[in-house]
Amino acid sequence: MTDPTPLWRTTEHADLAVLEQAWGAHRLSQILGAALGSYNRRGNVDARTAGAVLGVTEGTIRRWVRTGVPAGKVQAVIDLVRPPQGAFELEHSDLLTARQNLAIATADPQKGADLWGHKGWLDRHDLAIVKIAGAPVMVARIARHDRSATAQRNMLQGGLKDAHGHYLPPAEILTFPNYFAASIARLEILEDVYPFRVQMPEGKLNRGSTKAWLAEAPRKPLSSYRRNPRRRTRSKAQVGIRPGA
Image (cartoon, rainbow, N blue to C red; front, side):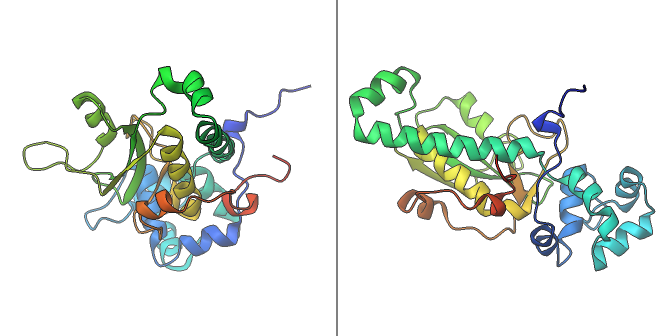
């Protein structure tokens, strides 16, 4: 009897129609380029690189960008550009846990302090949306509000820099009352941009390579996630969770 495939290598349980709609309007070029870290001079995916990885010609890649990926090749593209199934299921579990922990800390502050006070998780935390340099993608990162210069650089790692090589401010940043509130907001954002998620190439980012999404994905401003966190997750079908998971 062979061992089951590790969840982190399991093919994503995805609604193909939702992904194909998100990849329309030439976004397939962007998502392929982001996943491969390879672009041409016009900022589109380098068709030669993409073709070599997917086992097709440059012309075929250009045709897919114009007219869509044929049914027989959709899974190969998903495997290349999307985070693994384990990423989505872990996020789903983390969101449920964060909601439970926030409820405990709110209802019983002393219990919350006993459980998490020594870790600093009840202190204020910032959630930052960082635009990645040289790629049409965003990532969401959490850091303590009262953080060191090193923690600030880690939060902005891979982001845009000025002419002097200093990181520019994030595209958006907001302070939350504690780590759990910030974590809930980040995980809800990742649910909302689910069809636009992309797996960044290995070595591109030290943090968040599985938590990136196309910059043009529609989403609410951060302030909305702080004011109106959802009480329950989206349906499993909407965020790629396998039935029964």
